[in-house]
Image (cartoon, rainbow, N blue to C red; front, side, top):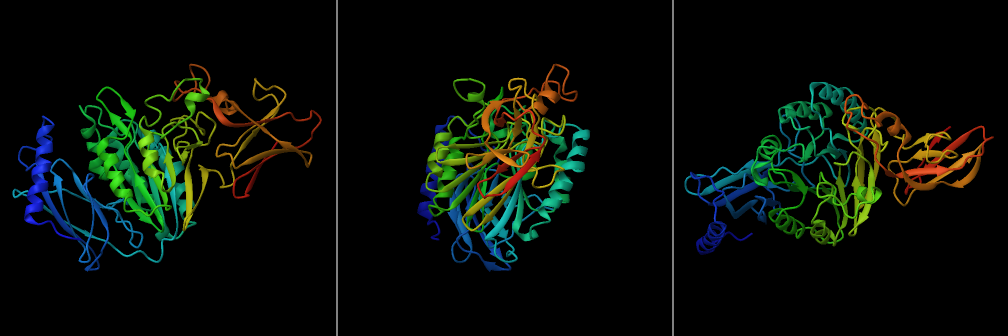
Length: 489
């Protein structure tokens, strides 16, 4: 890396300061210079680490052979952070949340010096795994207790099947349900689960008294650091984005210009063709609007400027992992495979399922080199619990058919049925409402804990006209990797 000359520094500083003046307002604190000269080093065991991306959320630079970096920042940027390289462990806080950042502490001379110390990973991270908790969304002490009694032990059991150095977790937004004073209870859950956890911000993680989007995540950032960032494990590049834009009255799904510019610079350092996984809270593209016969996605349900994201991801084998909708769905749009995960809290801790019938649970992803596999893990159920079957008459719209909900279905799955050991054929996929969700969530008084929850239409229901004299009916669902799962009636 080449250090900035004094002339280059003054030229860049003048340009940045001018840009701040042109906005007609100052975002810098009065006691701090508007422009900051940031320097620092990245070390491991006292030795320099070269080619580590370091950023303030606007600029991305790499460390040189001495582990040094240097760039010009704005004092309103709260952090300097690095993209943790594959060869190093994820730094963690005392409670286990990822700690890859430092506050941008600016001196009176307009300078900031930042030091990062990394610890070498215990072996290769080429094979690794991660769990994704979408929408833990606890609002009360009782719901915190449910998270700790149900979800945490289940995750502990799941992660115990992987080497501790090769697995991490992600909370994919709506960690809280508006009451941000409960964040320490989530941090206590992370400490118990025992793996490094990254966090994405959700629409219920905001400071609703904020007048502008830039201050709406101040409590989130106090606990978890930057609202967008990246890191590497093995050959995979991971990105966490903040797609919740707050306008003081409401939120919309949107990626702001600073974030997109940062993402472009971040991805410029990633070789085309690599596996890139992006975590957001609001889906890039939920298809609920189609199921509900609406013309377009709602502003609060999808990223309105997702085309910009798709364009940036086009050179890569890209996956987006999101939550927000409390239903499970796979969407193939813009060259990206999006995994919209069912909620950890289900239908807002009102019972054992989401409002599309998906069980309360979380995603489990395994990566080997350039290959990624996934499954949805139902809380409190074995790993092979991947469908639920209902007898004839369970769906009033199909009185002569059985129904199966295959919540992690994508177009590579096949769903068949057997009568008394004889294969009868493929089941028909149709849009409908899950019978158990209808039972639990229908009516103004149900569910008791959240009476505003209603069943939602889903595309992962399968139907078959079973013979009335069949003694035993079995539904078999086979995923894209040839793994089969069954449910008997």
